[in-house]
Each structure stands twice: as C-alpha cells, then as structure tokens.
Length: 282
Length: 252
Image (cartoon, rainbow over the protein chains, first blue to last red):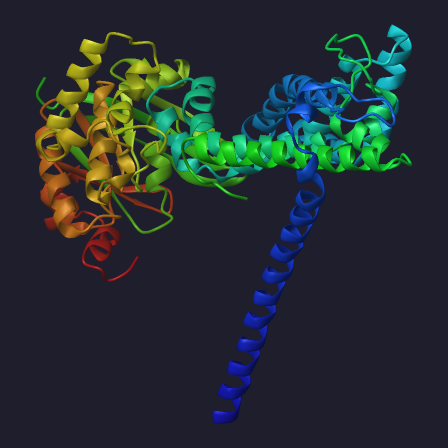
C-alpha cells in the first residue's frame, strides 16, 4: 500500500510540474515576442509615425500614417461583413438548424471555409472584385478579410450560445415569448460578452493577414481613404519595409509591427473590460 | 364556479422519437385548486405537465396526440405562444435570466411582449413581488442582477416572473427540489394563497408535500394514469394497490 501511495504522489507531482513548466513556457514565449517587438519598435514610435507618409529613401522623419488609417478601414469593412454574417450563422447553427441536415450542411461549410488558406480567399476576391472593377481596392481587401472572419465568428458564436443553459430558453418560451424574441432579447444578451470577445479574436486573426491583401487592397504610398482605390495596411507595409535593404525602413517595419500588435491587444482588453455579462468560455 | 373544470385532457399520448412516454389518458383539472402529480421517476410526470402548455414539443423529436381543452379551447389548435401566456410554468432549477436585473426578470414577459408603460410595469412587478413575499425582502435590490440572491429567493423571483404575465394556470415542475426545507415551506405557503386566483398543477417527489398542499392528486406510473382523486382519498384510501405501495414507499 505504502509503495503505491508514494508512486501516485510522485506521478502527481511530476504532472503538476509538467503543467507548470508548460505555463511558464507559453507565457515566456508571449513575453519574448512582445518584448522583442517593443525593443525594436519603440524607438520609432513617435508622432511622425502616425501623422506622416513614408519619406523617400535617405530622408529622415517618415511615417506610416496611411497604413495605420488603411488598416482601420480594412478591419472596419471586414467587421461590417464578418460580424453580422458570422453571428447570424452562429445563431442559426446553435438555435435553429442544430439537429437538421441543413444545419449539418452549414456546419460543414463553415468548417471547410475556416480551413481555406487565406491566400485562396484573396485570389477568389481578386477574380470577382478586382478584375471586375479593374483596380485593387480597399473594398476588395475588406471583403476578403470579412470572408475570412465569417467562419471564425460563426463557430465561436455557436460555441458560446451552446453554453447558455437550455433552462433559460425554456423559461423564456414558457413566458409566452415568441421564439425570435427569446433568441434576440434573452439568449443573445446573456451570451453577449462571449460573442464579443470571440469577435475581437477574429479581428486579431484578420488584422495580421497579409497574403489575401496582395490580391485585393495591395498597397499605397499616399494618403488614400477611397474605398475603390488601393489602400495601404500595416501588415503589407511591414512586409515591404522589412524586406527592403534600408536600415531606416527596417525601423519603420518594427514600429509598424508594434503598432499592429498594440491595436489588436487593446481591442481584446477593451472588449473584456467593456462588455457586460457572463463569462461563458469555451 | 365551484369545482369547475379548467383543463380537460383527453386521450393524451406523448413520444420522444419512437419512445412513448404517455400512453393515453384523460382527466379534468379543477379550477382554483392545487393538483399534485406524483409517481416514480421516469413515469412521465414532467412530460405530462409540459404537454399542458405545449412545452413538450420544443424538444426535437417530441410528439403529442390527444386534446387538452383550456376552458373550451383546444390548446393544440391555438397559437402556442398565446397558450403559454395563459398557462405559465415554473421549473425545477431557478432559471432567472442572468443578464437582467430582478425587475427586468419579472417584467420580461410583459416588456418583451411590447408593454412599454413604465408605470404599469412597475405596478405589475411590485404586485408580483408582493405575491411571492419578496417585496420587503429584496425591495431595495430590485434593480441589481438577480444572481446575488439565495436559491429560495431566486425560485420565488421565477414564480413572480410567471405571475407577472397574469396566467390562468401555473404548472410547476418540482419547484422545491432544489431548495432547503425553509425555502420550500415559504413556497408551499405561497401556493395555498395563489390558488385563490390561479389553477395550479405541481409535480413533486415529496409525498408529504403533496399531501400537505394539494386538493387533488394524480398518480402516474409508466406513462399511465393509475389514480386520480381528492388528495385525502388518494393518500388514505387509494383504490389501486400500485398507488398504495408507492405512497407507502414499498415499491416504485
């Protein structure tokens, strides 16, 4: 008996130690990435970065104002498409089509869609929008990112809605509320926090997407907010500036990376602070 | 009015997919009385009362046949949403809406159905809270989320929420089974008062509770109605041997 007890105790400690080590490793990795980017990007993070356009090679004091604005526009467009469509699909999967063959079909489609490499989505939007409009455009970029967001938002919304106890649906139905009001006024507000946090994760996912933008929004060295013109974005500029042979451009790319990660992280934090309600987590 | 029939049930059968849960029986439920539904686990008690306000059918694969007349109207030929406003339900677990305050919870049935008049809503909420004896107890917390209350208080909030819609019948599915004896006692007292205005059908596992509070008792076993009569008769002089063994705890 004694030996068996010791054996279990040792295993237990080993496993706890292993879990602790994994935690340390993953948080260490996050700190390492953040620290490295901050170290390289912070020196260039001044007012010029946010207010100026890129300076010609050899000149001081350029910024990436057009890319910061462009990223916000692209993400905004993506949200306009991805949030309502994704949440709608999530509600359908969880509440309406749960056990039907049609629901199974939609679930399969969402799974396939989330598995499509983003560059394929880029090519698709290129062929339906860029070719038709005969120009790279912010619109095309936003559509591509929006399509990428849909499955992410849909699956998360479905998962969160599944965590809302069935008893709440029954309680609401038993009050004589029509089904759509039960979903809209009782179930969605209860799940709002989880759905909102899921949306910020999806935004974080597409904010750094670069591949589809090569085919859609391309890039722009000038200040341009027109939806039908090519638009700059932080990931595209990071790619261009980081691969160029000039030290000053490298610094701009590092700062771009820092700004991008700051936008994403602050969006996630804001959602966690501001969204009311329950912490339903998957 | 005396002993008039509120719900007339005939040939009621219910299924989950191919499994038949109610085998087909009829009965009349009296107005302004408390009718207790007892029987061993799995005998179809919950299914039975869920058939009385069309909650059975929300489960995928569930089916019902037969008729249930509310006064003279067949509920299976009416709009289920309207039927559920006239026949309310209280569940086993206190399922308050966590995203809402106590006030909003109780007002939900009315406000979400389009009642906008703040004054009127306030009146209804206060009246319902008073009916369940919570107005004094939690009056000042009424605009806070309901989640901070004890489970007994939560269950009374749920009853108040059902009352606020002003139903004619209230169905209760083991409303005290998650509560301690004192909270259960509060609810039992409450039911005796509520029957002045409402017809109450209550599922319970607790024989003493059924004997204490109900006027009529229904004994179900394996989806069949075994015995239905006034509570003293069923408990003291049951006609069927199965009823007697169940009540005395000799067998299921």
